[in-house]
Image 1 (cartoon, rainbow, N blue to C red):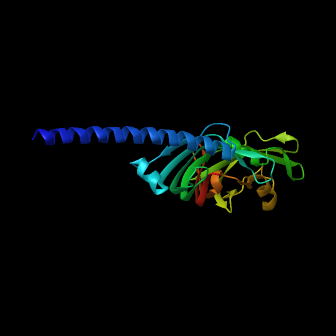
Image 2: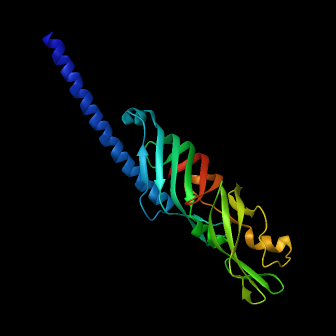
Length: 245
């Protein structure tokens, strides 16, 4: 009976030591992965990396990690024209089936899904914010974007008719979609500018706009978009996503 008790104590102690060693190892690995991801993506701040699953050490022996969560704040994505950037807030991705090289210099996830937000003031940079002539004597420009409810964007337009600025800006609800990595904003209807008849194509040249977004981390792509109180919420997905190397 005494021998059994001693054996149980030894097992508990060894189990505790294994758990401690496993957690120390995973914390070290998370730090290393964060540093490599920062260098690979040329990030201004170190990302958050969380390796899920227990035990970690047995996953390492197998050469594959089940689940890694990555968080990046204020990511500067390419805007499609090679020069401009667009800021993406709070990009979070869940990487599944992460295979890594023997020296840990590279890592690739079989699949990835995630979410992020583009603030309205950031997306506003894409719209025509400078007064543009839409008809003889009539100029208009977008002055604000906000949540219109039910997944719509409220596009606010300011207009000047025959040199007189309209007393109140006009607004229109717009749908937001993503096609081939491009966020598209299209008005559901057309705003009226002081009763002046203006061709639809001229009005849409102001109200409708799009923003190409390239170069997301690891090659993930835009999947879906929806207007929300804090900005345009996007979902991303990808396969064979490179985390490092």
